[in-house]
Amino acid sequence: MSATVRALLRDDLRDFGGYKSARSEALTGSVWLNANESAWANPADAEGRLRRYPQPQPEALCARLAQLYGVAPAQLLVGRGSDEGIDLLVRAFCAPGRGRIVVAPPVFGMYAVCARLHGAAIVGVPLRDGDAGLCADLRAMGDAALGRAGEGQDASLLFLCSPGNPSGELLRLPDIAALAERLRGRCLVIVDEAYVEYADAPSATALLADHDNIAVLRTLSKAHALAAARVGCVLAAPALIEALRRCQAPYPLPQPVVEAALAALAPHALALTCSRMAAVREARARLADGLRASPGVKRVYPSAGNFLLARFADADAAFAALLAAGVVVRDMRAMPQLDDALRISVGSAEECRRVLAALGVARVEAAA
Ligand SMILES: *Cc1c(COP(=O)(O)O)cnc(C)c1O
Image (cartoon, rainbow, N blue to C red; front, side, top):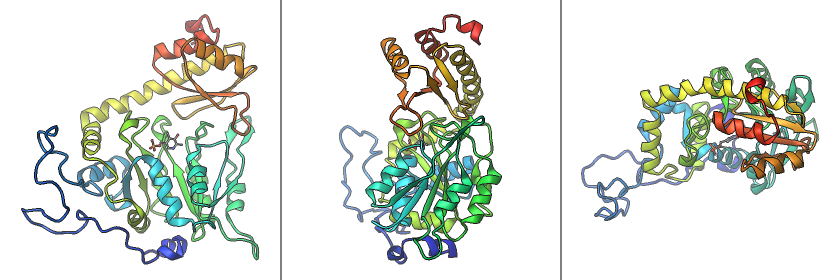
């Protein structure tokens, strides 16, 4: 266990081994009778692909994902979407009923949901709305993470979302590095990169070598178009990954999902996926132009993701007009600072056209 993990892991989990599954022991044999599996395949499973428990961390998939993300397999934990990664981080590093996390609202809701379920306190350091967009204040977040002398403990986890959902903000790696340096040995900095493929920017994995208090979340749900498969990764120092693995339920990924993910990451599929990123960036720019040309739109924020956050003169009317045209967008009005905002995913060209038509932008081509 590294010094950082020793310092930050829950005290009561220091010598916790987790569940020892039949698949986690390094045994070899040709007759497997150690997991109470059925001796026969299910009649509906002709090839018997589903008869046995899957590998806890499927080796071929982990190797492929590690290669994709540019890390060693020991720096990667695969699970049921980044959502499971978030949950594991909270459970491993926040003392139940006592831990504290720092987030920058308005932001993706799962950080607070997991913290709440775990009895951890949530400290929100609001995004600042300025000329550059809705931006996280990393200095203020760092201040909020550090317990002051005599009063209170350090936060366990600080969540950054880059590109931000829903802000669209892309954080600079030197700024993330400086924050991690400031919190070294005291708090983990989690960088959620669910949308980084759309940003055409380097991943915070580049910082892992020098900062063992950084963990990066990646997912196949967005750019890889596998949301229903539920595959996501935590990337971090091997000691941190090992600590999370001990907290994870034994067989997170169903075998059909492992096979689907491997197929989606085969060279031909991956090349097509990557080629689509440029098209999404192009469509995002065109949709943003179209929205800015709409009389009811007050502001369209810059976005490094596959969505746009826009403020409307009458968000109620815009939401209703879109719905009436059969277009469902994300209503952000219940979120802090966003009571006039909608978030619109960048869809196909035809879908974007329908958004603009519903909002009364008649001449889409002219706007583009
Ligand atoms: C969509 C999204 C995810 C993805 O979660 P999965 O569980 O991997 O599907 C993670 N973080 C953010 C900010 C997201 O918007």
